[in-house]
Amino acid sequence: MPLQAPRAGRVGHDPFLATFPGGLDATAIAGLATGATAVDGSMVEDIVIGVCTNAKRDRCCAVRGRPVAAALRTTFGQRVTEISHLGGHRFAATMLVLPIGYSYGQLTPDLADAVVRAALDGLVHPTGLRGRSDLSPAAQAADAYWRVALGPSAVDAVRIESETRVDGAVRVTATVQGSRDDVVVRYVAGARIEETTCGGKPIQTGRWSVARA
Image 1 (cartoon, rainbow, N blue to C red):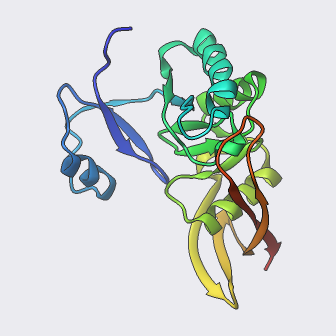
Image 2 (cartoon, rainbow, N blue to C red):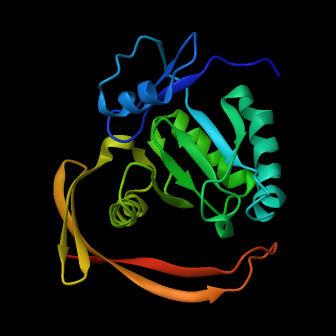
């Protein structure tokens, strides 16, 4: 496969990707996130899909990720690429949608196809959603809670505004479909998993519980 020009950008509200004719050093890439680096590349409208197929941390990512990556590549071409560890390998197959920065888990080829088609329409698909990479864990849980209620919806349908710690929990405030809403998010420790379905290292599990404020 021919080499592609490097891309860099930022995720979250008002995300973007830009293609650059030459390389970018680490300082310039970090500056893109803060706006300190001028975007002198060409802006791209494309959605870029990364599927984790890294077997080093847990072979589930290769066993389950490769079929997803291959199926998506057949349908969507070079916008799909295989990438390294995304975290949460017990959720394999996992996938990252750029530039919006949403990650997904427990994907089948069919579900991944639906997620990508939604993304190409400017929508965030709620099924299998694991969070957005620029948000804190509590805000990611709240964002996913609202998006499940909304169904496939625009990226800016949920805009996280603030987080406040209250009695061991986090109150997350957002603008949801133009209206203010609040939820309280609390981390609940779970069982220790000695190995995943495909084998691998022990994992201490947990989940974020979301309740109306």
